[in-house]
Image: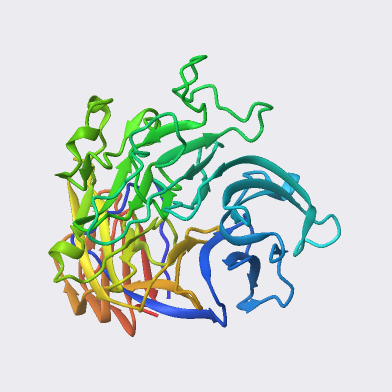
Length: 437
């Protein structure tokens, strides 16, 4: 049941406590899922081993969208051009059989939207990585540029100091870096990339450095901010945050720091004014009862099905299966709530064209849903600011809503509006029976 009044003002929703989250199975039968993304329509594109598959209307299409089984070791990620529905271009990052990490452009078939043209490959960028940390993600930002992260190329063997080749703080190598491309420019290099002095020995693609193994990163589709999950050595896992428009020349710390802790101090000699310290860390192997830990970077929720999730960054740990909801408040402070162990070995997150969130193990894909933390709510006092109220069972309200607020009630079984309930002109009020599904 829904009620709508005239809309005058829609400020940003604010929530006192983070909601509970639930994982709902969407599809299974995969072998090695590592990426989930959208091409701007209702389909989801799933990177599974050496193939990219399509999930459409709840079904995995029998024929892969792209099959590189005979050409590559594995596909790391796929990203669709912002104008994909017009130009048909998409970009694939993969590990080639010669150990190179490659970013290539492909085109969709002119005759079947569910097939790519395998012979359309145009290599954009490649580098030799051997067998160490590769990073792996590939994303378009709101600025229209294509971003990728790279690992430091180290083995990450337990009990070592890590970064044995010193790559992360070395600007002459693309390893341990964030790279940015202008795929619509003949040079592929955005004019704002910071290291373009002739003869400086620094690859022009680099815009940030000091990363260890940034397996997954994402952009907030509303603000354009970047969130990076960077897997630690033995001490700390970290999530990094950088506001939109300030990505250039950032030093994410490794291996001078691991998380906020000094690590290899001899690597602290360059660009010390540009350090980006983690927005959050959690304990790794050394401080976790000798249990492994590997952060899996997620997404900020900007969908519409679960407004109580709005603005929360959802991320997880591969080894423990723990999930967190993190929110960055306007004053720069954060809330970070552990939501519990929700699955075994989460490996990647994704979002559809509407901003709804998904998470996967190697063989299954789940959609993330949310619900309130109270069983029943009774609301009788006045409501004068934008608010969201959610209950696992029922809401009863005799409240008076005023001050051009936007108010949403959400419950699983019942919403009861009792005598005295009132909404003033200019208020937007919605009642929805959805709960945690």
